[in-house]
Length: 264
Length: 350
Ligand SMILES: Nc1ncnc2c1ncn2[C@@H]1O[C@H](COP(=O)(O)OP(=O)(O)OP(=O)(O)O)[C@@H](O)[C@H]1O
Ligand SMILES: [Mg+2]
Image (cartoon, rainbow over all chains, first blue to last red; front, side, top):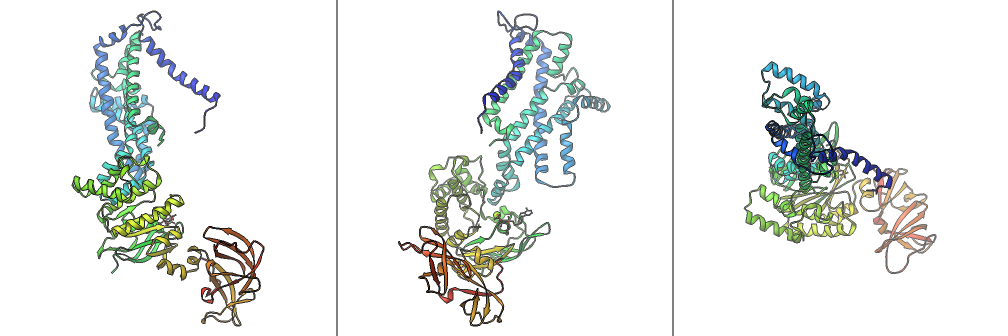
């Protein structure tokens, strides 16, 4: 790869700073001892973090979101892997339609989806159901997983699968022992992106959550409409830390370059 | 009698025939090469034998059994892919053990056979490496070991040496032949390198546009090519266009040879002769006069281009330690009459 010149380096630094600055500010503000959203000047305090855990509704919402994102991401992987295999490997009538259907949630505004699901859930009497909330999240995160699975499959050397077959492996064994391990970076990257998307989805969730199933972003939104205090910053800092940890874990295991850029 | 047989096998891809009606019988323990230019159907033929491509027509038999519709995982053939197709997430030892695992060979025996096979391909010390940590030649040998360890009745190799440098390639040719001899596996190797096909095989199959046009021992293929295409594809060949006239074949007015009996007077004929069948003579001697146009030193021999009335002729002169004629020098060319092959027709070189 070509080395970057000084101007390009400066540009990169500016972009990174621009992206990171709000995150850094939020994390710093979270440690303020003051009652307002200010940078801590004299002292660092864990007061607002303590406040988060003294709000049982926040803890419940966090638990809801964690469950919701875990289950939704897992289900979407279970759907996207077979769907990706079918779309990548076979030419069948309706293949393009299937591909389009799976990707359509990407282009429909979440606001529209939220209203639609609200109506649907009211119609079938599923308002406030956690299972149906999971379903709505599966629908919006599956396209991301499918994209990554398809990218992994298209970069896959088919002859390794053929070699396994000639060595006596059945179709299922080929998938389990060769195909799946080879696209695992794509699958886990997809899972993680699905998890993150589900975890911080707000627009649609506002419509389809009930007090019992309220998610963390919805809870934060409701709290923020009433009052703005540094507790929001503390919650945000916790979320940033969680995401960073997940990314770090993924990078350790597979290397993020490989998953997101597709480098070998 | 053939151990592996193809009878009238064809493969049509959307109206285009990649392989047309080929017949081939390979004996047990034989080493056969499929030789031909790019796109002539070599890989398709090999993959039909492996069971990875389904023939449009015809029948494939193995040891008297019809395997035409059998799934690749039931045929039990060893296949080495051009791209090696190693499993990137498995170590060398795991790659080689895969086929044995599929056959439910007990652990202890599996380990023993993998170790034996890795020793055979000189990779024993790299057993725990991953494919990405190996050189091209080492990967190659892993692929060969993986295919051989299951003791397949037939080994199918698709251009297994095409990605190697000249020296490693030669080494691997010897190695392949040695392994094949010591294990006695019937082997079919695809290649588009004629030198490789000639040096390594018991018999060579030449394919042209989906057909097998000659199946012969390397020596016979070289000496008696069946088609104009094979004459020029296998080894170097001089092609001289001439006319059958009084007293023999005339090329540009010079009578070179007596004509074949079945040619009518006045018809166009083509004469073929290999560069190494021509000898340099002092000017004024020999059957044809010429002038050296260019001269290449190739180590074991010199390759001269000699301009004559009949056109440019390649002459191979063994290196005897003395320099042959220099560029621009006038010389004579001579040959044994039997080494000039004459054919009716303009000999449109395929
Ligand atoms: N899956 C396919 N679909 C359509 N046409 C194909 C397919 N596979 C091969 N062909 C065509 O069949 C012909 C023979 O292909 P094949 O791969 O057997 O050639 P080859 O002799 O192995 O050539 P090379 O030396 O370049 O590998 C080619 O014209 C190719 O374009
Ligand atoms: Mg090929």
